[in-house]
Image (cartoon, rainbow, N blue to C red; front, side, top):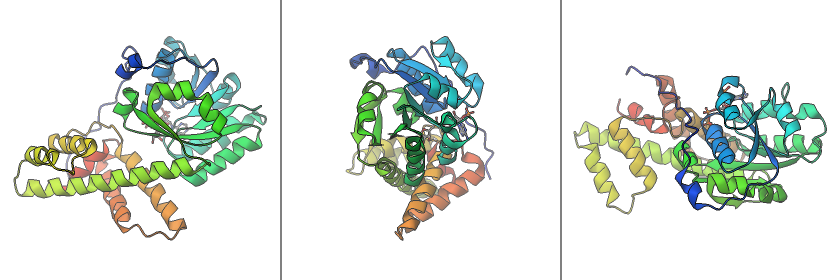
Length: 317
Ligand code: NA7
């Protein structure tokens, strides 16, 4: 079993802006935007929202992470409920469905306000359609409006303002969030009812997860033959199989550089959500099931916080 060190914590540089923002004409909405969750994705998004002139109110469970945003002009609140009181449109971007539900239904959560007075709640955390329906129902019962806006892309794509937004739910909110989405994403899609965007996001994650495991196994075999992994990637680049993702992840595997662009724990969470969805439909997904097992095992080896490409380490055993 290899010695595993945690990847270095990434630091948000409040002074650097995504290059693409210079080319985009963004007229910031006059509304006040709340933001719950300042992890890697949340921080990167909020940084650019502040930069493009949006008025932002933030909260994070670990309060220290709010400090740079306070210095950059955001208002910091003590609880999610306080953020909702102070904002018109509230974004949530936390690790998983449980965290997303806690922030809405939990202690000091959004619904403690009882009457949301037409405020708009946008769920950006990666969640399954059932969780999204539950959250949407809770928000609407308290006179709020709800949009799921799943963010598809890596941390680097977030930093470059090149995410893809997949949205479902309240169409008017989709329009109201336009200046925020234009700040952080290269494309936005409105996919209809609540749940649709979650489904599409998880389907894309299935393609990604299965592809990564295939790539890792193939490169591990090359390694056993002592064939240079860089040669394989160079040749792959000349074939019709090449893709930005396969080439980038292949290079990371060859270098053993697993700096988390998308943490392995998030990839495995997504595959778990996919398999739960499939289970409810009696949809057979044998390859995805095995892919999930491979990621689960890699997690057990200590690679949760590394990039999903660390799945290569397991394949080499
Ligand atoms: P990170 O960098 O792992 O950050 C996770 C964030 O979620 C961070 O702010 C956490 O707060 C927060 N979190 C996690 N669980 C909870 C609970 N139970 N309550 C409140 N806050 C919580 O993830 P990313 O930023 O890369 O990704 C976030 C989402 O965007 C994820 O769903 C991706 O798929 C898309 P902490 O700072 O630890 O106190």
